[in-house]
Length: 141
Image (tube, rainbow, N blue to C red):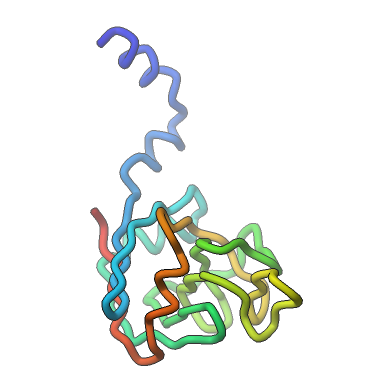
């Protein structure tokens, strides 16, 4: 108990703010858990939950418009399998589970720069079963 209290005292305000930012993403028959990161965009997404939309696929990516309108933050041209991102031009949430049509080789490349806002827990490749037009729900857990 004392050790746990000491650890809590060591946490920064940002770490405390990020605790519990776990989400569940349901897309078609696929259900996965993920964690949002410390970016301001992730915070805006967290505040907009729950989100329901019709998903689109582009290679091994699912994307859909969300009620968040922000610019870029720590933008990246290449991401990793399992990354969750915000794409400013489309005001879209993106789930990356493999290469896209813009990728070179095995890299995971969005259509243009994105801000990574979180990471899937578990096997991101499960999202290969999701078809364009499937309903996608993001909710806090």
